[in-house]
Length: 198
Image (cartoon, rainbow, N blue to C red; front, side, top):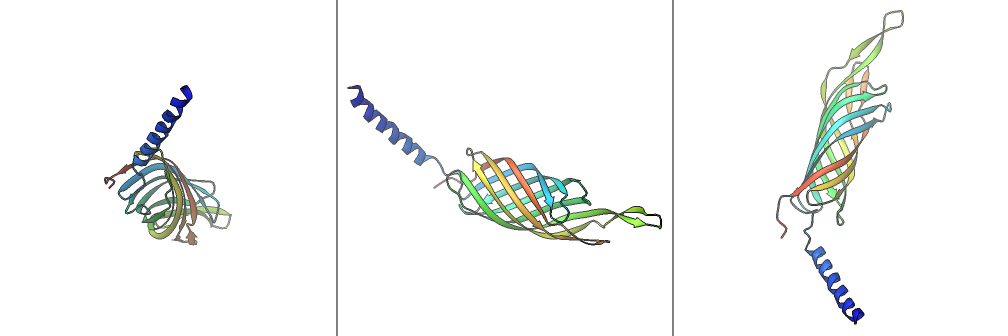
């Protein structure tokens, strides 16, 4: 008798759970606004120096698969033998998303501009002395490719990871200085749906 009543009860619970899952609002959809801020390390390709940035971004979904995104980077410091003194930048472009449940992998392209200044020790005089020579701080156009993954924990919080390749050049007294680097971001972000699901 206990077995006879247990089976219908389990079936009712399974149907109720399935119905609740179907009624749960979709997170990745048109109108989703997500943002995050984090500390981002970056590796310069030409000399292997490690740059550190404060990075913030905001993403608005035009559809389930397409979003527009803006990123800001504030340069903090170079570790190692790097010669950059400033490399602050902004980027704006589009991402294409491949959402599956709470997972949201994406790829994107973003043109941008950076304020860049470099400093290098140059030979001076006949006795092997050196003098620090600074480049003129200039705004440099650049382009970036990005890929990453968002994992939505709830309607308001997500985890994110992102890799960005940046390409650009800065004119200095000692020649064109390549700015190509890989930037790595990860952390916790916030999200909210700005439109009601139909």
